[in-house]
Length: 100
Image 1 (cartoon, one colour):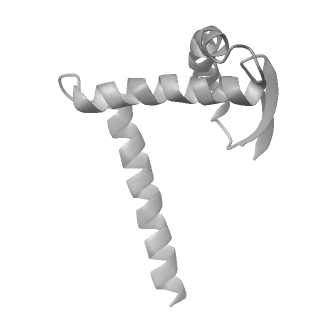
Image 2 (cartoon, one colour):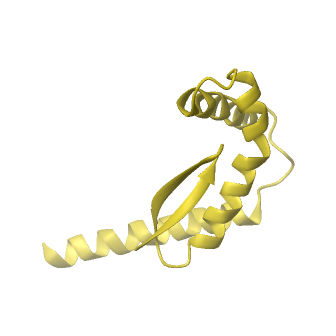
């Protein structure tokens, strides 16, 4: 694991990242930055925590919209992530069974 610094709504945060996850985290950082100005304006610019709450609400609204009105088909990226997680679960179950 490595720590990387992400800047969100004008504040820098150090987060732990698995090997190879940095490009994805940088992509997520850019998505957050796209909405940070709106969140800052909505929060009245009072403090970073309030701005982050508004940013979370903006993103939650976007997620809700997609969940209520899903696009046609399933994203190949989503399918790959699901497959990766299922593989990790299978490996963990195999390790548990071998230890028992």
